[in-house]
Every structure is written in C-alpha cells, then in structure tokens.
Image (cartoon, rainbow, N blue to C red; front, side):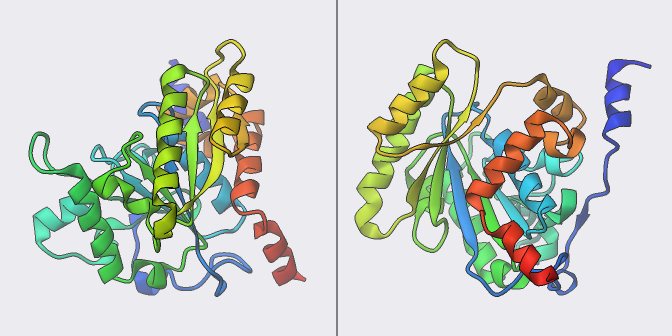
Length: 294
C-alpha cells in the first residue's frame, strides 16, 4: 500500500451535497440556530500565508461544537472550502450566474464536513474582468436570496484573497458583512508588512462603521524569534495575538487527503489548537449547548 492510499484509508472521503433552504432550517444540534446575532468574521493576510487552511480548520472545529457554520471563499481560485468538501471544488456563485443567468441557494451552497455551508464567490475568467467586482456580485446575490435568513448560520467566516483591501475585496470589512477582522500572519517580514497594511485600512475605515480588528492569528513558519516578532507587530498595530498555530506535517497530510486536520486527525495536538482557537471566536457555543441540554 502506498502512502497516498494509506492516507485515504485514514481519512475516508465524505459525501458532499448541495443544500435546499427548506431542508436546513431546523438546527442540527440543541441550541444551534437560535435567534441570536450571527457572528461574522473576515480573515485577511498575505497571499499564501495559510488563510484557507486556518479558516477551514476553524470552520470544522466550530461545527464539531454544534454550531451552524458558513464559510465564504472570496478568491477567484475558488479553493477556500476544498478541504471541507473532500478535496472537490464546488461551483462558485459566479460560475452559476454565468451558466444560468439566475440561481437558487442550492445551486452554489454545498454542505461539507459536519454540515458546514460552503460557498465560493468565484471570479472572472483569467485576464478578463475584475475579481473585486465579482465578489460584489456574489455578495449581492447572497443578499437577494436571503442566504443568512434561510440558512440561519451561527457564524460566518469570510476567507479573503491576500491582503487586498480595495474595491470588492474590502466588502467583508464593511458594515453589515463582517463584525470582526482577523489577520493571519507568520513572523516573516512580508506577512507582517501585510498585517500592518490591513490594520491601517481598518483604521482608515473606522469612521464608516467598518469591522473591528479582533487580532492576529499566528500561523507559524518556524523562523527565529517568531513568537516575539508577531507579538511586537500586534503591539504596534494596537491589537493582540489571539492564537498561535504551530507548524505541523499533519496539515499537509490532511490536505493531501482532501480534509482538514480537525476531520482527519481529530485527536491530534494540532486539532486541539484549532479547537481552542474556535473558542476565542465563539466562546459561548459550549455554554449554549449545555443550557439547551439542561
């Protein structure tokens, strides 16, 4: 048996299906889907820093705790949710609109691991059109179809392309979309430079009621003095480090199997790190479930 097949044995691929708004109104677990404000968090950071990996594992960890989770990928590559959908790309909102002209929620909302609602905004064909404008179009379509009201997520995570904070890429920062922005960064110079730029954009937008900066999630690269470098950067932009994710070979092994670490290696220390991070972004979830059960 080769290594790749052994990984698939450890992480058998789940079925991925589109969802119907009528079929998903009922909460999946006691206390989930209650009439509470939706917590919406946008993740920004330097391209290639590991945002999609971080966000997908966070989605999986939140879902394991009984929350209804929605992850929206805001990258033209449409690859944010692949590890939640057994490594398979799902049709993006823009793909559906190009093919059909119109759409229903079930055309581009897919239920992945542990019921996570997976959406990819998509983008224009390479070399044609504006990716930022594509995100605006996708968000408008979600609003027109009353996606949040129909699906009733407890938490929505936006996985935003790189550190671009202009045009459509700034949409998740705006009032009515995300409430908070988290910056994913390592201790590398360019990643920290991107973190400063994102923080500056939020500061510039503060008078317009944009999202607030929640903090930095450190996705470690094992460079010298990394913890100190990221902590210093957080202090400079007047925020905090909200979680430190260690570098682990399990991340690549899980992704090779089309899964998150949380799903593929649920008992690993790495999965526990994502679980702890999920409690920062939604600390009352476990308490809500306990109250419902009692």
